[in-house]
Image (cartoon, rainbow, N blue to C red; front, side, top):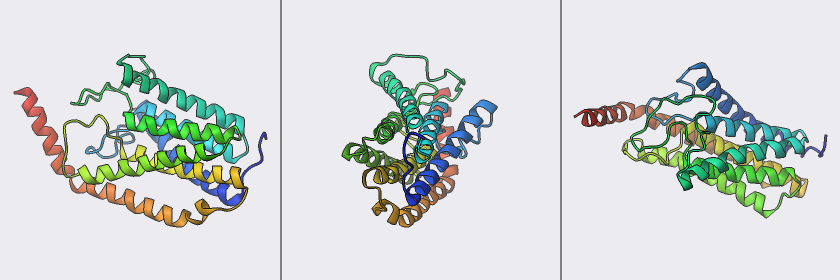
Length: 253
């Protein structure tokens, strides 16, 4: 081991949140590879989680697990790889270039009316995971300071706002959804953010702090918010499907 593992409470939180994100990322990746559409898109009314989004999420989750086990170098490598994929995709968005990484492994046949390139994660998700990768890399390189905390907090705030967006727009489908993020991707952002805060807290102070103490309340709020998102999506499923059907008819006409 190349770094002393954080305190037990922080380790437990980091592993629990990273495990959640890893399971989601792995399930979505397997869904794309095995042709199981209900894994990347469990609800037809929700935007699917892209394969590259799952890969980035899985890399960061594995990095956080490695960090909690004291494997700082491996965590830094995972953070760098995940951040590189996110950074290159952001470059595609900003420059209009096609680096051919959106469908490098699997072919995404899903087409969106807003013109989003097939297989390309949304800009808000990419920005958020780039912040998470930065935070993870800083902690792994034993530079857990204010920058790592701010990056993790920004990632978590983005995840919460994206979940709230699903609540606000569940009954009001719109055409331009290129900046939307799937509910499972937004949930992973929240989980990774909290795990990074716990790991960074241990690295900075070496003691139990507010992140550990607030975990039960944060987990309860997260569960309620995620349940509300799923409930609203199911409640307005027929309305959103009708909207999509009408849009297809307009295009045919």
